[in-house]
Length: 175
Image: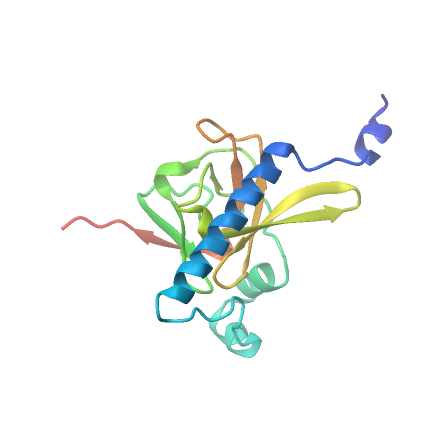
């Protein structure tokens, strides 16, 4: 097979990623059902005023979270972050990842092998010029976070490749 054929052949989403998507979808649906029965109806996701977000977020944060942008590799502030803490959605504050599942992937973006809870993210199949990949969004506000791949380390085998601009890091403090 020549390189042109390899690059242009249609690549499918792996069964492992499809199973992860189904698991996240079920967890999000279950969370919504629990919220409805709990007395306080959860507001629909993604209902943030775009003008308010443009004022509150940096231009890069807005472009990445609202317009499906991406950072240049190795340019994000959390790529080499080693402190213990929690990574939250920069738009709504939802807790997404912890430092104990962060790893050095060499990809140029912060990488995590798992999420805090499967109901915190929504996965969406994406096709770009024959390239199939799985987009990761915050389940609460639908902000674009990055993509997930099935080439990560054990125990999950996943690599959530996330833009630093979509995250807000909260360092763990000891009392």
